[in-house]
Amino acid sequence: MESAGKAISDSSRRKILVLLKERDMTPTEILKHFQFTMPAVSVHLRILRNSDLIFEKKIGKNRIYSLNKEKALEMMNFFAGMWDYNLKSLKEFLENQKVTKK
Image (cartoon, rainbow, N blue to C red; front, side, top):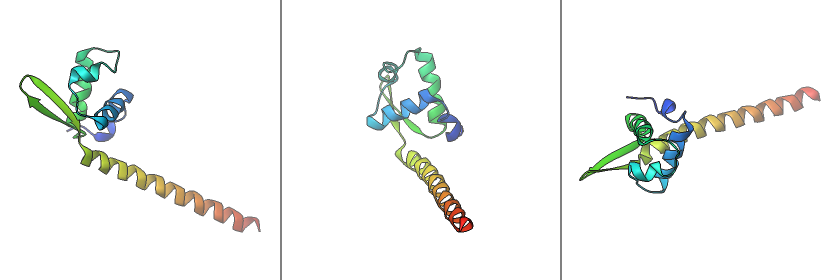
């Protein structure tokens, strides 16, 4: 199992996630959005799949990839919580600065 953090550390994989947010796609459809080879797309898809950020469904000879919305929401909530914490800390810091200047 790959780390979701490691999986999203690459800008190409983040772009793949954004593409899959819009609709399910085959590797060939994903490849059209990049200037690298099919083996490179396959590596990115494997990393995203192993981190549970995407699902793979086999239909005949085709593989269809889709975003794991539950995992994406979990990560979004994690980062939103960090952002909220930082904003609260900044607010407290600024309020304390006002008090000490008086």
